[in-house]
Image (cartoon, rainbow, N blue to C red; front, top):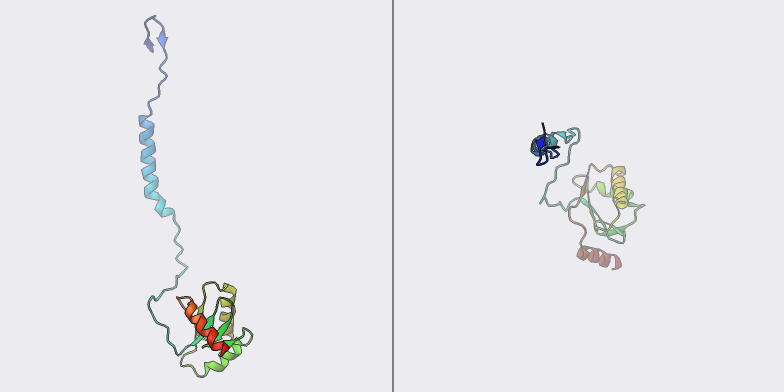
Length: 149
């Protein structure tokens, strides 16, 4: 069945035709590329918050500013972390809506923001707004100047 060489002996056919094998792998690759996106899990129980870009923050709200050194200011007045909840309760009566705006420097640790959130919750504020822009250097200097004078 094999091929005969010039001396009359049969030579073995040792080459493998890989064309059909390549065709099978290409078909499998295309099938996997089509099916793979369906394997991604979409958890519909998680609702992502909506972001209102470009909405300005109203100035009649209570505003807590935190500098990169960790100094806190409530509407421009220096305040300590311990007295924040009490001051928020006192300020709540003069506000139109019990909303708190937090403006912090980008280097402020998240634990500090969590402490402010807890103080706002203790003071029964209904809404907490974390400002999209961090506290600018200019604003920090203005707050520091107001504290010194």
